[in-house]
Length: 467
Image 1 (cartoon, rainbow, N blue to C red):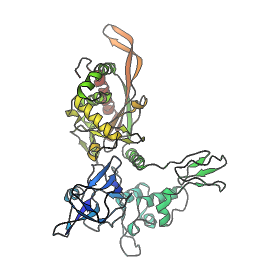
Image 2: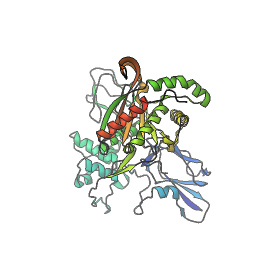
Image 3: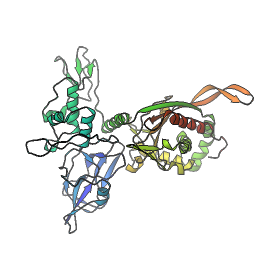
Image 4: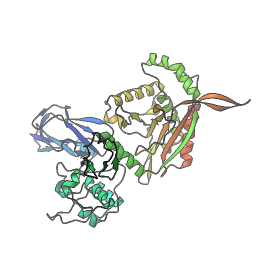
């Protein structure tokens, strides 16, 4: 018999880890080829991990809610064969594990996408077993950004395997230090600080547990572990997993890219009237609704071809110009969270192809049926804040991209129309546009010029074109 490693598959260029949601198989269960062994989740999508071979599950390396790095061994499957260990080569080739000192099973390895770890001196520390203390890239990065010296880093109690310092440990240490408290605590406390219920600052009325409505007694004032003062009638709601991941990536993006936002407006009267005149026939012929999104995406691609720097990413001091036009479209989910499915090869699709691709992705997102590939390899993002009635917005860049555009609600307004015979007033369909871009590589001249070109493309929509 042989043992096959079931490894965490590569899920996209910006995804470094995934959370274990559920084990569909348990130790001792027989598994067929391609049968789902477990379910995992990233900040973008939930997906299933199938078995590469038929056999019997003999070991589980991560438990539910554990965070597993890409390329790590999730489980071991016993299959027919002669070798003692058979590597799952496709994933191992994508994300090889270190050849030295393999990570102990169950240890949490932290990482931050898009924020390279700064070099920090990692001299060995005596931990009682004469072994050098290990610090993950994320811990070192946080230490560097917070100005934590090596001597202070060595004093932080670790709750990871072998006493290693985890992300939670160092963040709790930093929070305690900033609050003025003595930044030392027992490892057990460090592991539970984040989930400690809010305690009242007075002892007159106990504070309810998270997710329950707080006491309405007006005399009680409470404070959270982060120092937020709560008074009066309040309700504490625990963030769900996706919201926590979205929050993290938004903070990462702002810390990575210096954001600049430019604004413009477009007269989209021709586009609106054309859609109104053609949407019924289009839906009857193609079996797909004709929304504004494919019309806008077509104009975006035309403008991006004139400004290739908009369709790029930054790797250190190297600018990577993307030749594929993969447009991500921010999509609101029924629970209020956000996901960004990607229209692959948008420049290769006609209006019918764009419409069907967009509608299929939107439906899959709303029904939680997106596949990992549906949210990968985006090169530029489009968000329609007008769907919810907003006139404009200042969106945050979807890393590792360098720009994101938002379009507002289309409103009828009185506008000045310039004609060869003179100016006149007319009621027109107007729409605001905003572009947030990474000022490290895109200056205001390029950002504003691109945004103006998008507006020009929208205004130049041919009212006589065929659907």
